[in-house]
Length: 228
Image (cartoon, rainbow, N blue to C red; front, top):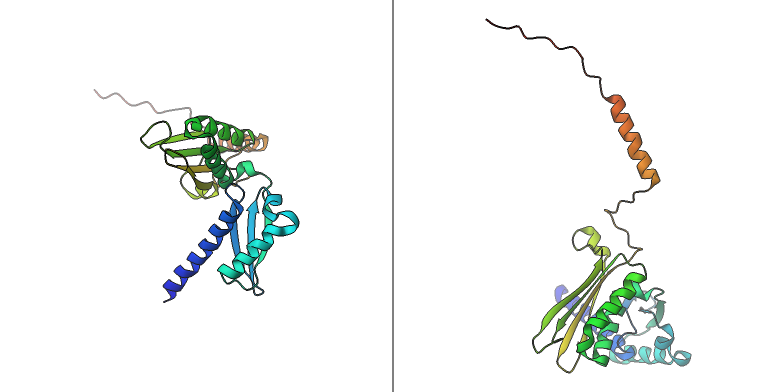
């Protein structure tokens, strides 16, 4: 019974997130976080366009609150806006923007859209980025395309700091899947080594200590007697 309740609870959370994203529109919301407090549910909406999400005099916030109360039976939901100051490093925002451009300009310009997005991400200072497109892009058959630049960790604990997201574009030839992965310059890598002057001084000192600790070799050596 507990497993069924957990599954049902997670499905309700997913439905809340998807309904908020659908109401606000594609490309405006990065993520929706639900925090449960003793007073009620707190909905945190991460976006780089807070003005469009809030609306005039908070009209959209009031409409979202009504939807949460009527459709999902939340008693006292409070909505907070978390502004994303650097949208270039947010994978979900970039994935949604690629999907919107594919729907607007068509799948024939997918290379221009992908390279332009990749250039914008890398010029902002990202350590690495990867864009994957899969669908009927240049022809009638579906084919995967990959656009990547920089350093991107894919395995180990360091791969957890890579921001990953996916979106879907509905074009005339068919559906195109979009996957974006970004490694922000602010991400903390466990295996990252910075070689600066302090590091070089430490290496020199360690070499000098090792050379001092080495014992000098004995110069003389016994001559072997010749056997007749």
